[in-house]
Each structure stands twice: as C-alpha cells, then as structure tokens.
Image (cartoon, rainbow, N blue to C red; front, side, top):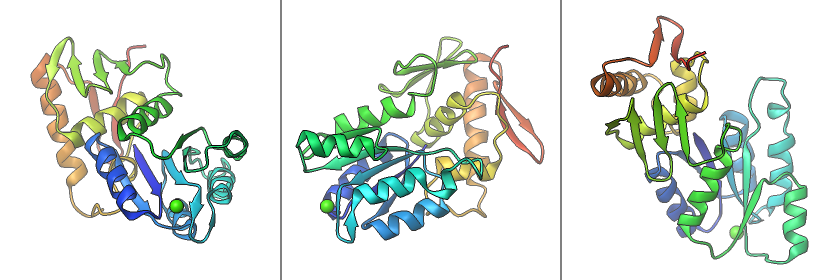
Length: 232
Ligand code: CA
C-alpha cells in the first residue's frame, strides 16, 4: 500500500514516514499542497495523510482536489485514496468541515504514531470483508497489527517488503497484478523501475510460502503478472 504524507513540519513528517515504512508501507512526502497535487497526479496512492495548515494554502482544498480530482473520478480506473487529516485545529466545526471535504478520518495534533498506524490499518482494510486486523485468504492468515503470517497454520517469516507485497495480494485476490502495478503500490518513488526488485521480492515471498506449506498460492502468468487465487 502506498501512502502520501503532506506535512510541512519536517520532523513530524519524517517521524510519520519512518513509522509507516517500518509497517511496510511505501511512503512519499510532500511539504506543501502544490507538491501534493503533483505527486497525486503521477502516483496512485492508497492513502493520504494530510496536514490541514499548509504553507501554500488550506489542506481542505487539497483534500477536495485529491478526492474529486479528475484522475480519481473513475475515468482512469484508479482507486480514490483514503484521506486522514492531521490537524492542530480541535474544534468540532473544523472536524466536521474536514469530514465533509472528503476526509475519511482525522487526528488532532499531537497524536501518537501508534494511533496513526492503527487508523491507517483500519482505513486500508475498511473495504475488505471482516474489518478485523487479520486478513485471511487462500489459507494464508496475516495479522496486520502484529505483523505475523501463517500459511496452512505454519508460520512464515517475512521481511517488511515481502510482508507489504503479500498484504497487497491478500487485499486484492483473484486479480492479475503486473510488475508495474506492484511497483506502483508497494514501492515508493525512489524505486528504480528498471531493476528486478519486484521479481526478486516475489520470488523470495513465493519460496517462503512454498517452504512453509508445500503449496504455492501465488501463480505466475508469464508476460502478464501474478495472481493470488482465493478458493472459489
Ligand atoms: Ca502545518
């Protein structure tokens, strides 16, 4: 899952990015609204953490444009990102205005990074079936809060990136994912599209799953991509 942090307080932005990256999210940063809109036009974000007070304007305007932006209007097949507002404004009116502008959730500063992580987890799994912190699919169980994975009840020890990749497959089963799509959602803008980092990470993930249970849940379609099949 790929996240954009829009925050002009550099220390806070860095702390949020470090915390979310350690949970396996691909994170990009923008320090003002204009940069945020540029990034959102180019990259396909699953979630945006958005500061309300930005040096070049109101975060509410950025929120409206990100949510209603032409790139997300369904015309290009892109998914509208979830938005968490980060605000020093604690008044009820400001929160209501934020939610009315398309934000899915908000946090009033100062907030704990653990709480932000929990809110991010909750929003990103809102579209999945059970709403719990455990995602179960194709014999795989992933506890997104504890960062634990089992396959056919056998523990699977994954790196942060392998965990992030598997989480993407579990949240989007039965879809063929090209290497480009995986790079877009699981890696950040520093990833070199011409390396074989996606192929290597997939290969390691598949090997660990096969080693755990003697089966392979992720199929390869040569020239097209990869698919996690859920039992029909
Ligand atoms: Ca600010």
